[in-house]
Length: 296
Image 1 (cartoon, rainbow, N blue to C red):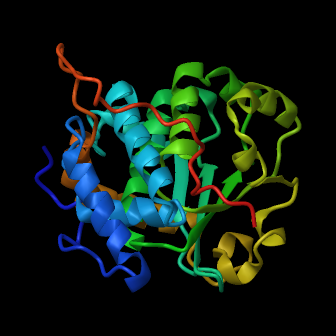
Image 2 (tube, rainbow, N blue to C red):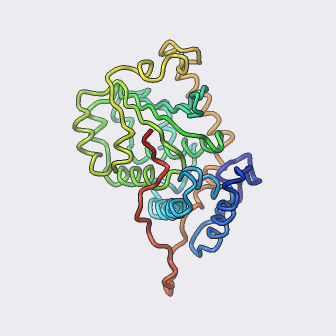
């Protein structure tokens, strides 16, 4: 059982819900409390998942089920979530993960990811997925209910040696989680400075990508300034904001200080083990793609 406020660390009380959706949030929350194997989800979880699923109650239920199941079945990713753990620290010291300060006119948050150390030996893929999920959970807490997210993956410095270190098990968990259970509205995923071996990368991941997510992907050999404009970017790309390295250091420090205990506590947000005499009312796996993925 969690002892802290989730999914928004500094909002223990339910966030204000748009009037037209308040009844559905209440109904979903009551349904969540009735699920015998669910963790102690809060009313804010009901709000967050409904918003991510475009206010569709059935899709939100399926996303919550998938979330609880993936967290329970993938302990290598979702257990022992100590930001000061050696594997997580190795990842955070070899990458830059930053939420950019300025949102788009539509209210979308820009997230930027790249390598800071291009040595493939510094990448443990399981720890990288774990760290990525922890960073994103904390960012959801910081942002609250966000209209949408635009993700920028920068492949500059990525080598074939990095591809060789990808493990299929954690990759499959990650793709299932992002597509079926991650409670945000994904608007676009840009792959910038695309490497010459991108076809090999796609051969590995494409069997795991549903059409909804595939439609969000855009590849370019150019940098992020050619995609979103310099007004949204750090000084590295001619923009007005602090360098990526500075923002990463600041946001890493926030994870280590403000979010360490909260992230460890979030490891309890998982489906309980099935009882030996479980009835037919046990949670059934979802069969429909998570509707938080949108194609504009």
